[in-house]
Length: 121
Image 1 (cartoon, rainbow, N blue to C red):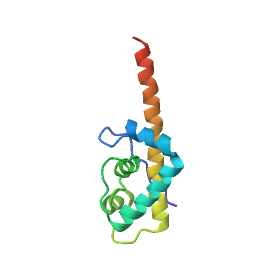
Image 2: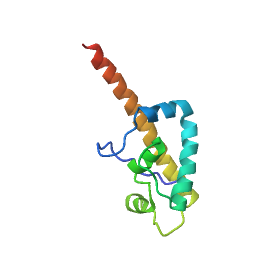
Image 3: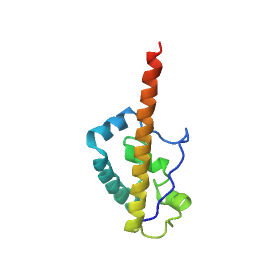
Image 4: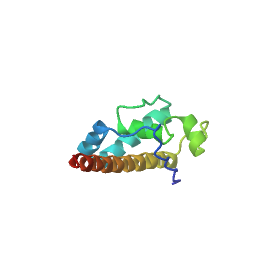
């Protein structure tokens, strides 16, 4: 399986919000991975449009440049004129999950910092 490069934390890229964090906590990371596999197969393989928000997986797909075949070709060199292989799908799911875990950890760390700042008053 090819390992895609995880994008940097650019302010213009999507971030997880409180609703996303609650969903991840409620469903668990294994369920989120299952959802991402289904979404990648349903949306990318079938060429459906991917919303920009409403779900941490959608945000991850946009942040990691895997939300459509054109982005996959430009960012990850997977030609859009060929069928996605299972190894491609696995690589896409892998980068989505790495992004979600990273952003989850950043969110939790930022929340701790906010609490520390509030205690200073």
